[in-house]
Image (cartoon, rainbow, N blue to C red):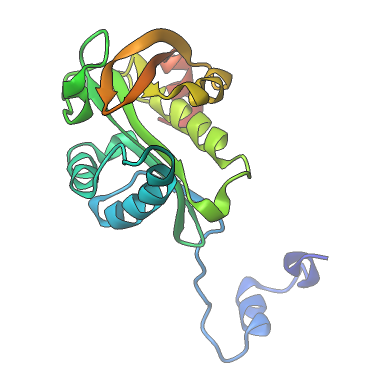
Amino acid sequence: MSVLTAVPLLMPLSARSSAASPGRQRRHTLPANEFRCLTPGDAISVFEIEREAFISVSGDCPLHLDEVFHFLTLCPELSLGWFEQGRLVAFIIGSLWDKEKLTQEALMLHVAHGRTVHIHVLAVHRTSRQQGKGPILLWRYLQYLRCLPYVHRAMLMCEDFLVSFYSKSGFKELGPSEITVGPLTFTEMEYAIRGHALMRRNSGC
C-alpha cells in the first residue's frame, strides 16, 4: 500500500499534512528524475563525467572544460542533462552548424543562424552505465529538438564501434568524417528532424 492510499481520503488536506508530520514543516525533496538544459554552473560535473568516459578509451575528451563552459554559455538550450536526486548522471551538449558536412571549425563554433545541431558529446556517469540511459537520453533530446522550429537535422561524428549505437536511434551514416583528432578517425552521421508542427501541437512546445 502506498503512503497516499494509507491516508484517509475524506480527511481535509491541511489535516492530512499535520497528521503525516505533526509539529514539522513539509520537507522538500528532489525529484527522482529530472531532465533539463544545462547551465555553465553544471560545467564541472559535465567535464568530470566526460573525462572519465573518454580518456580511458580514446585518450582525450571531445570537449575540454573551457569548451564546455563555452557552449553552455552560448547555447545552453541545445544541451540536456539527466539528473537523479539532483546529481548529474548523463548529458548531451550540442551547438548550431550551417554547412552540409562537419569541418574542423564545427568543433568550436556555434553558428547562431544554423539549422543543423552538431552533437558534440553524449556521456553517462560510470555508475549509471549498462542501464539503457544513453539511448533514453538521446531519444528525449531528439524529441526536444523537434520543438525547435529552426532545427532541421542533427549531426555527429563517432568512432566505428559507436556507429551501431547511433544507427539504432535513427541516425544514418554519411561516410568518413573530414575531421581527425590525432590518430583517430570518425564516421559522420545524420538524423533528420521532422514533425515540428505536430510536436508543438501535442507537447506544449
